[in-house]
Image (cartoon, rainbow, N blue to C red; front, side, top):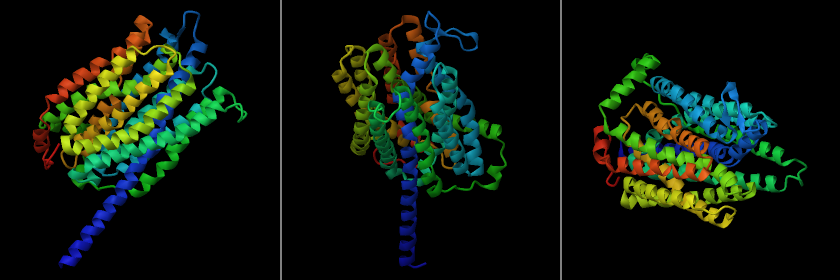
Length: 448
């Protein structure tokens, strides 16, 4: 084969890789609206208000006869959803790797979540149980879909590109969240002009997130391609494959060491994301329009923050950059504890800080983990990663809910999350990531 042919083939492969990367970015664009509009802004306060309307004189609802403070329903539902995801993700990940057919599984999980989110239009009155069930289905499906989506990263980007590719995906997701939040804010603030009630406006915002999710999922489903597994791997049953994954991880102990650190600090990140609007509305007495504006500020700054921290990682390494972001998270939570009630300006200042570190800490964690995955085991290992990301992020909401249930104070609940960032920082600092990458059988980047 002559040199010209080799160069043409290399150029064609690079063009195909870039096309697949652009398609991959669009799943972040599709699903991030759910995380932003549903989990972060509307569903927490709305489901809490629905539960409060169904509560007894003491402020408790009684699902299946169990007394639950109405203000804890949302947090407990989030916890239950991720426990369900923990049970499902390892089997789906093993099935994806042994069959090589990630794309159909990604589509099934994405559209199940989108359908459940669209169904939130029917959440009203005192139907807090319906809201809880739809949240469990949507959040669990999103976790499974994100596991499959993330597992494409080491397949579509060589080691030197992964920090940038991962950061661009997060940035595009936050851009979509910003765009839809602007539309949501217009509808919510001017709902009378549109001839709908405030409750109906919220339900439209919830359902539209599901429609957006489903519509834009078509782009990655068209551009991503499956990598067929060898026939001998395709014959391995799911539970046996799961056992082999666990045994394989024992041969690479530094990879689960990173996952443990990530499990801890990301649990704190996810809980701040899902509970911030409840804290703002219930403890600080802020209106829904203020909360939407603050989250919109987070989304806009997170685009710049994700790209900026991605560039920072090029000079300082992903690990050091993540450690710096965890220190910033700790400061943010301490400041949040002391925020005065009824002071939206300071809440916006806090939101700006969250936005600057949010996207980068998540994007760099994803790209760093991609270096720790043995080749050919992407979906299996990313199922463990997703457990640490969304699948195991039930301790934070549970602690938040229990702290509020015991103390009746959302300030105590929010400050309790500092422990996740401190412990996560210490555990991550102890992981020798260069040795971990080499032990996984991957080339070690010049700066990591």
